[in-house]
Amino acid sequence: MLPNTPIQFEHVFKTYSIDIHNKSTALIDLSFSVKQGEVFGIIGPNGAGKSTALNILLGFVFLDKGSVTIAGKRPNSTSCNLEVGYLAENPCLYRNLTLTEHLRFAGTVAGYSSVASRKRIEELLFQVDLAHVANKKIRHFSKGMTQRAALAYALFHKPKILILDEPMSGLDPVGRKMVIDIICDYNKAGNTVLFCSHILTDVQRICDRIGIMNKGKMDQILNSIDITDEKNLETIFIQTVSR
Amino acid sequence: MKNVIPVSFLTYREGLKHKVVLLTTICALSLMTGSVLISGFFMRDISKIILDFCLSITNIGGLLIPFFLAITLLAGDIEKRTIVTILARNISRTEYLFGKYLGISMLTATVMLIFLAATLLAILGGNFLYSNIYFKGFSISAVVQSVILSYLGISILNAAVVLWCSITTTSFLATLLTIATYLTGQSIDNIVRFVESPPAGIEISTSISKTVQIIQYIFPNLAAFDHKLSAAHGALIPFSEFAMLSCYAFVYIIATLTLSTILFIRRDL
Image (cartoon, rainbow over the protein chains, first blue to last red):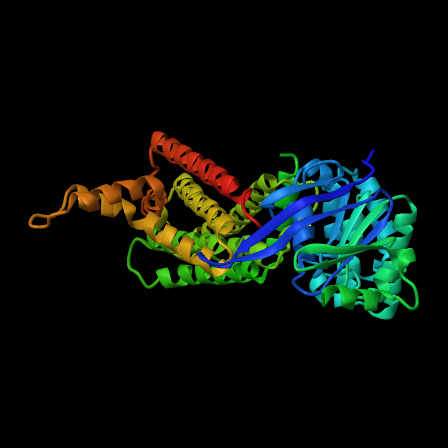
């Protein structure tokens, strides 16, 4: 059972060392939370700190100050990763392995039996429409196919929280629709989605709430019902980031 | 640590599909066949020449794993961010490092087993082509023992690769540090002997002597694992020495991997 706010950032600070004397501030007092069963979108200009926030959430990067919880636990605890699926901006799959090998690995670490794993692989390959290339090496995949393959890998263990970093980048309109449909179906099943994107139309289309990040802070959080034709997301976004 | 095995098999499978493994195996097998033919130009000690040649190739072939493949599989994983594919699952960083190490060790073992089989085939070929007299001193146990010791030496180097990859951010730097470790490991024994009993007329300062002593304890003594010459002469090394070297390798590997883990779990990826 997940807590009511499966993702929570409280006063998070993060700086990176550029060299011995210089530091770059990535996050300044970042606070927000994502409610159970909602789709929360994060938008912001390049360098706003979106990827750093996701990296902290997944335990790839350590925060300097503040606290972050995911599925009620601290990031980087292996048990919480059982509840989490992650799709990176540039999907990082092993180029010399096939999609089936990736999915079989996902099944093994998630504790699936070989029969259950095979069944789930078939299900996912059908869902992302990659059954015809299941035994081809990832290096022969196009960008869009790799993105869908990585999505299948992220969804293998039926995570309750899905974290997506630019899931629609590099996809053609058909691929984009497919990914949006998968996210929406996944959310309808009561799961939580946190996702970053530059494509405002997609964010507006599928998110319940949208956070606008700028210069390492969460500047504004909007409910999707607050966005109207006159006050559209692009206008609000530009106004917020140019402040 | 239940996920160490799946990670190691993933690494092993990925490594096997690398061209490096295929190319080194083809090159090594061709060179070994060549060694049988070349040894015919010598008037005596044909088996020793074949063995010396083949065991050297086995060692070089094994060394290609830490220098090229291990660094590609580990540092490349961090550089290209494929590491997130693994760490985003319920796999800890410790399991990741140990799994990677085990996978790389399995690759090294596979390559060296192929080379060992080729060495034995080369001996059989030599035996068939030339007189039996040249192969009287041949001992299969000595050859196997020498290959096992070479493997242990390379396994130590693989552990060093894991350490350097866990603290550096580029594969170039990790390669340089691995080369430095290899060169130091190969020569430290001679340097220590030189410092302890310098030739007449040469004075070694206390600070240099102390530094060498410290380096001796930090860097692995890789030269101790080189027993190609005794294998070529059909001489087995005493079991006590073999056991001591195996324990040394095991302790060194565990210590290096533990240090790697301590450093790796604290770093930003």
